[in-house]
Image 1 (cartoon, rainbow, N blue to C red):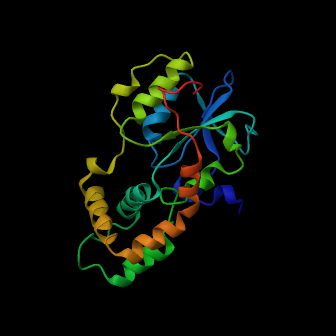
Image 2: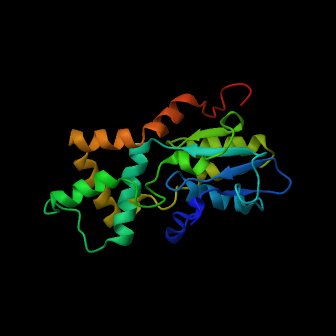
Length: 212
C-alpha cells in the first residue's frame, strides 16, 4: 500500500489540499486544525480538491495551519474514541492497561498522527503558516482580503469542536486528566518532538508585520 493511503480507510489521504487553477496558492489541510472551518470558506471561491503529491503541485505556495501537538492530540484521540470505540466509557474504571496502550501507540488515525506527515515534501520556506489559536479566524480572513478575496469569515464559528458534543467533551476531559501522569505527558512530547521543532522554527502569519 502506498504510504499516502495509510489512513484512507479513516477518510484521509496524505497530500490532500485545495487550490484554484488560477492561483499560485494551495491550502494543505491537517485534521483537527480548523480544516472543517477553512475548507467551506475556500469552496466559496471555487477552490477545488487536489492532492499535491499526485497532482504535482509542489510549485505552489502552501497555506498550512499548525496546532500545539498535545492540544491537537487530546482533541483527536477524543474524537477517535467517540467514533470507533463507543463500548468504552471515559471513567475511572477504565483499565490501566488500556490507557497504557493508548499512550504507547499514540497515533491511531489521521486526527492523532504527527502534523509533519501532512506536509511531507513541501518547501517550508515557501509556505505560509498560521497557528491554530483563538484569533485564527481573523488572521485567515485578513489574509484572504490581501489576496482579493473579501469576506466575513471571522464571524463564523469553528466546526466540529469537542465542546459541542457531550461524549467528545467527556473524552477530552478524561484524557486531559490522564496527562497529570508525567509518564504519559513525556511519551506524548517525545512522540511529537518533530512537530514541536517545526512549530518553533517557522514564522507564523501576522497581519501586523510587513511582508506577510
